[in-house]
Each structure stands twice: as structure tokens, then as C-alpha cells.
Length: 62
Image (cartoon, rainbow, N blue to C red; front, side):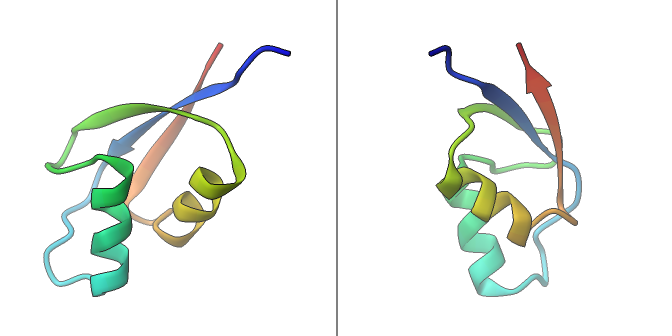
């Protein structure tokens, strides 16, 4: 079974956001606006992205 990867890009600032949402962004490995990280798609990552969907952009990588 092949793994599916997604690219996550931070599009909005985390200044003034909820502390839990800031922690999620740092947990995903994002630090600055327009920084990106490639992650394996799993339930934990998808749950984190659902919480901060208004801050990030997600692209599928095949």
C-alpha cells in the first residue's frame, strides 16, 4: 500500500490566534507565513488540519 503525502502551507499569521491553534501550527512544523511542510496523510494530521483550516492551504502530492 502506497503512502499518501500532503503539502501544508501556512497562509495567514498566527498572531492573535487561539493558543491551541498556535500549538497545532507549531506541531505541524510550520513557523512563518508561506512556510511549507510535507506530511504523511493520517487521521492525526487530518484532525489538526481541520482545526486550523482557515490558516493553511493543503495540496495533495502523488
